[in-house]
Amino acid sequence: MTARQTGLLVLLGAIWGAAFMLIKIAVTDIEPATLVAVRIAITALILYGVMRVSGISLPGGSKIWKDFYFVGMLGLVVPFLLIGWGQRLIPSSTTAILGATTPLFAAIINLITRNDERINTERVIGLIMGFAGVMIAIGIEGAQSGNIWGELCVLGAAVCYALSALYGRRAFSGMQPIIPSTGQMIASTSLLIPIALIWNGIPTVMPAPSSLIALVILAVFCTAIAYILYYRLMDAVGATKVSMVSYLVAPFGVVYGAAILSEPIAPNAIAGLVVIIVGILIAGGTWRSLIPLVRRA
Image 1 (cartoon, one colour):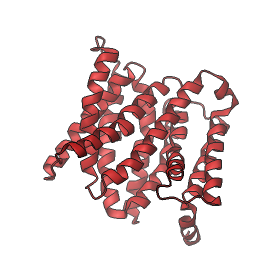
Image 2: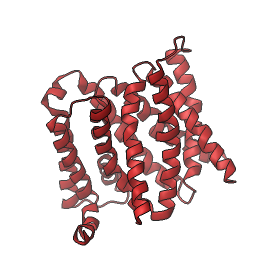
Image 3: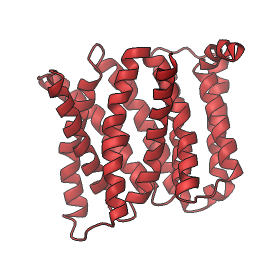
């Protein structure tokens, strides 16, 4: 990757890492279902506008739209709601750390389904390390407190992300990446608006300005613009290199939580994050590709 592409990758990690802090701010006044519905609706409008300007059209046919709805439910509706509920109980930094487990769950699902992975000692060690990192990050006090429900919500969201990524990779193979993402956003919006209205009703009280600002930044920057940046990087450097952004999101999330929300950073949380990332590198075999980079440095 060029220096500019590396800089854009770091920028993407910084943008996505900020999402956890912004959600924490927004859910103080906005119900999670309403927050997610508005966030996804704004993103759907922006991505659809980008598609139209680019001369790209959404495909028709019931089969592809069934896939849009299914992957949208797994990858947007359910995990976004779970994270919204979870962040009312736990710090944004904890959410960022537990959210880093998505590649671990993807590896486990691949192994169970024998999708395209083989079981070997390296992957087993990596998975064991990854989940040991989760237990370290949660800690004994966290497991014994009411916060465990918030932590389970975030881990559930990570499982959903892994399932949607694995299914979507096959269902949308060969498509320009912006097409399935826009389709998923539109499908998810049509599901979330009724859910939000049934669950929360029409809001009667104006949220605090800080919550509204957090919502707008979350939708425009952390979702729409971040997705566009992600696609451009994928076209330029490939999916494998772009996937390295996963290792940047959690550290940025921890830093934002501490610097802006004054959240304490527990030593076990940092230790857990390090163990999780090392486990992901080992389970995915990514550590091998890092050796030449370290030698050149």
